[in-house]
Amino acid sequence: MCYCLCQCPSHRAAFSSIAQLFSGFFSDTDLVPSDIAAGLALLHQEQDKMEQSRDPSVIVSHSPSSPIVKDLEAELEKAAHCMQFAAAAYGWPLYIFSNLLTGPCKLSGDCCRSRAAEYEVVGGDHLGCHFSSILQTTGLQYRDFIYVSFHNQIYEIPFFVALDHKKEAVLVAVRGTLSLKDVLTDLSAECENLPIEGVSGACYAHKGMCQAAGYIYKKLVNDGILNQAFSIAPEYKLVITGHSLGAGTAALLAILLRSSFPTLQCYSFSPPGGLLSKALADYSKDFVVSVVLGKDLVPRLSIPNMEDLKRRILKMVSNCNKPKYRILLQGCWYELFGGSPDDFPTEMDDRRAQELSHPLLGEESLIIRPSSSYQSFASDDSPAHTATHLPLFLPGRVLHITEDGPSRRSCFSQVRYRAEWSNEMAFRSILISPKMLTDHMPDAVLRALNSLTSESTKSCLLICTFNYLI
Image (tube, rainbow, N blue to C red):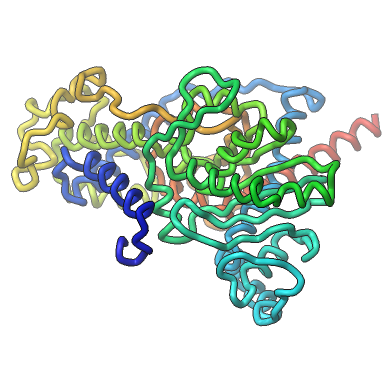
């Protein structure tokens, strides 16, 4: 990866910090991939058993005029609108993926036409396909765009600024991960100080996204992009949005701009869990809304959560006495076809590795050198499990969208969703599921939001009709 990218000092520093992070994470483990796969299969079934045995949640009913319901419906409608812009920032790859039949035909007429005189594009969009897909997704006109950048380096990610006349907003949309350079920005997960005036407590954030937010902040403020936008529409408000990497960067950008734009709003879709310190996360609740779909991995992804996952896998494989091949075969069957979770002895049985005559790891893959991660499996409070990294949290208020009904259904059945306000502490553990990656896809998030808003509209119409008849 180093040779594929420009070897400037900032890039070498990024590679160094990422290498240090990875070496520290894997230095005390000696598991082969099949051990990890078996541990994940066991952990998934263990989590499903716990979920099935949990008491049903108490559902609090609200009248249609309840402030909680009205606030939720309003935020869902705004989020669905902003998600279109967050998805549009990905350009033609996501547009073609979401419109396999009609997408290529719609873009083919525009991609080869030169429109350099009509708008200014920074970075690589030689055929104009990225910008054409943005127009198709957002429904905006050429004249509505103030600035479009496809420039992409480590800590420097694409974004665009447009006038959203429908919502009367100057909208800044930041692109999510789409290149190797974006991945390296994601992996720069160390903490970086981010002092904000008026915020008491420790202020720090994800280093890579903090750097990316600083880059966009300088463009917007120092280059006069926001001044240009508000000179055209001075009565508009500022809205910032993004998905994944773009979501984390958008939330940090909103924090940096809040003092200059007190009424700004940010909609952060599927942001990384390891983003903000507790003080900054609490500060952002007034102007940031995070939207998380289902069991999405990324909002639960942080260094402490990964350390916890590693410890759980080690504990699983050390406390299970079943053959590895059987666990893998039955685990594959469970992932594909469902059924009842296997009743393997795992950490929930409170067993110890030394009490088992045939541990899962077996003689072929026992640890070669002593490791603190393999010691003291009995207690989560042992020194080996103390946190070595600063805790980081999701930004703002968290709107969690889940599927309503059974977790497994036929491919042709219609999916219904429900949404509720959650909190950052509900995402402090990684959930193993086949949907942990698909729930992160921007088209899946947009589909869920559109489904919720359409159902909300139908419900409102039914209620209004019923009240009118009465």
